[in-house]
Image (cartoon, rainbow, N blue to C red; front, side, top):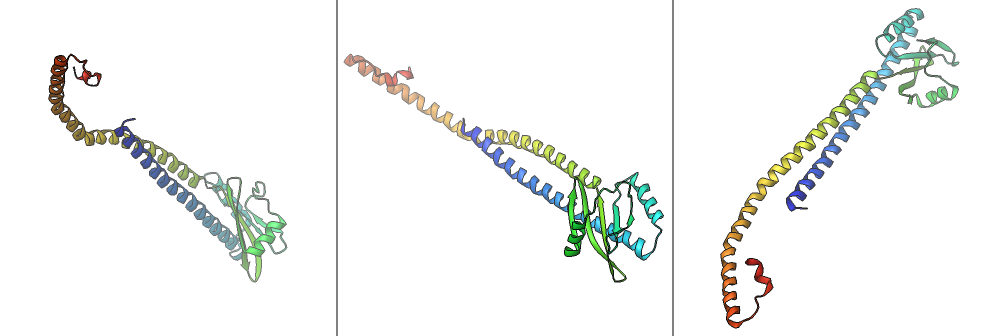
Length: 225
């Protein structure tokens, strides 16, 4: 492998590693931010629904109708509220009931105050809500379709930009390495042109001397002829 080819290959590999690390950091950061932002959204939705039901005394049927209507056009947050005896007092959609609350889950919420976890691709949050001195358990779950779509687009765009960047860097590396080695090539050619008459003269002198002495011409210089 020529030195120029080695340099182009090495430069391309190093650049590819740097770009891949940069793209990975961006993607992982976006993934983490999406998760945190959606958990915050779930928390707000859970508290808002609990306020409407317990504090504002909005009718259960109205809240459920709102949920079912919104669910037709977007991924609405599914909220459930339990009293201090772990009895279900409100649920957006009992017929769906994606999150199956259990006694150990309630105990963990009481101990930690708030829990977050995944159920399949859905994000789930469970927290305590205090109203008139009583502690209620509120759970909220939803699928972040918009967030996952943005993340998927970011990944695809990163891959496309990465491939295009590597191809561009490879072509640029070949072009500039060729330009950089042109002076070296020109200098080498000049040295060859300068040395060729000298070598021919040496060969001629050696030939004359060898003929005079009737000795064979050394094979090491025969290539000049």
